[in-house]
Image (cartoon, rainbow, N blue to C red):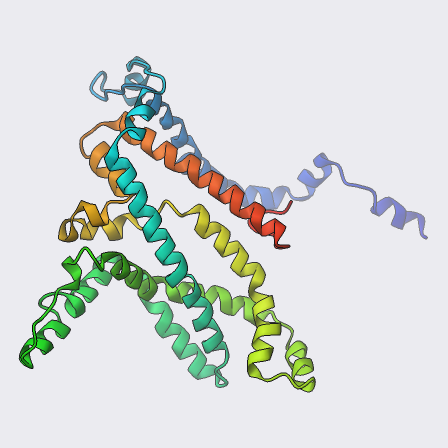
Length: 318
């Protein structure tokens, strides 16, 4: 082996790597500063969860935090003993389970369907149509559903014109959870389709050819080639979805809360807004939000551990 080859393969020290990558590090510095300022510095505000915070003690926010009395875990006791909090937790978990069972498989099925289209132009058109609703705001999405499934919507008016009794699904608490899931599918399924199509594009086509030569039909090729190729992406998105279990669409539910009532639409995010921030009980809201964050972190770590046990990488490696 050449002497120079041995020298070049020595482990690089941290200082040498920093000097080598200094240009790339400088390019990422603005993004790191933005993340630090807007994502991590505000975490320090969670200290008010251990206080009886009064923003009117001082006109300066920092001074108000310093002068507010400490109450220890009293705010957490208030939250955990509040029946409204547990009702919001129950609704949140029901929304999460429904979206996991009904929403999560839809992008996978659509991606497989779009990937099976032979003509690239048709595939691109279908993909664009599916992805378009992702750019709509929740106000537009809810308005579209109101015009279709509301009391004055197209379906209800058509039924009345033909002598049938109309209906209003937008104000029915019994079907509200399924309605929210349907809204989420229509709006965001196209984004998931793009993610899975990107994973399908990386599949080696020779695997399909080898499976076809072995006599595998379309379904067997999908089961033994396509789905195993999607497993890492499915595991990653599933871990992230489980970690986001307690966040089920603040804006979407807040816009429809008055139509069906808090009993059907109250989740943790809207609970924090209405009972904490809206009434200016900031310490109570911070305690509820901190509980949600800790539970969400535990769910991510647990789901990622399960992914490792199944042989997948998950969010991070072992």
